[in-house]
Image (tube, rainbow, N blue to C red):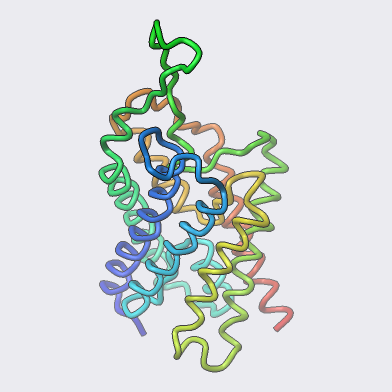
Length: 251
């Protein structure tokens, strides 16, 4: 239904918008000298949900608006159509990296002022860097690869299985309501299941911005934590595949 060129362009644009909103809200909440500083997890969850909303609606006419390799994988397992999967994945990765760069540019001044003056020692002007990796990629609260993997698998099933099931509800796709519901689903996953790992639930969403974080000239940026990077890639892919298999068996 969609041409290769449209899929590639659509997934780049849609995923870039998703990451622009998502990394943007994380930057807004995290960085010093941001008007949204410390506004909390609920704001982050809704920011990511609105990112899905804007990105998927924009990409929808071109590619269907997958924006997520786990979603693409689940749909491919359901439909047994694999020919265009690589185009979706490539577009999603390029878009994720582009969106991360755009979020960095929006908060360029805040990233360059990424230090906080110690309230206890104003005389010596002690400074502490504000962490930046969490703006771009996920960081587990408790580093336990097995537990973190299980969290990402379950959270991704909770995303992809409903997306597949929404297709059974007549009229949702034609009316555009399906995309709105998916956006609220992402908000719900963030609020309910995002606490342990930061809910990647999307390999491109985590890997693309992590690559960008590695190369960006951010002061005091710290490590890009590549030793953990495989978990938010493998977990969502496994979750997406399992969701596709469950859908085929149960529906």
